[in-house]
Length: 123
Image (cartoon, rainbow, N blue to C red; front, side, top):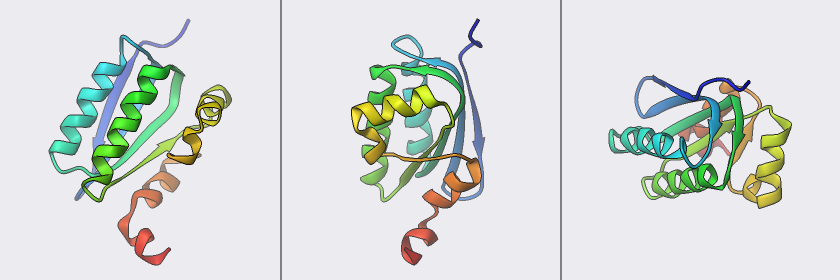
């Protein structure tokens, strides 16, 4: 049995924001993720980490929400990174070619570093 869908938010200092998603992100739950992301971006949180380590499934609706968030963030000079260790979810990103669009890393620390503007300047 898959865990119940839930999003926990962990705002940090400045423009950073961490979302941890548990369960399945699909046609029924993706709108909630979209709303939470939109509210964070509108509040000025443009460095967003989405932790999918407890996510069991995502579909094309979920991918659309993530793509929309990346577009909104890029227009605000923001960034998004995804934490994922699940092989099936990784395969979904690879098959769709979205692994080339998203920064996908193994840990929250790596993701936080990936959205850090100081890293962009150093890179």
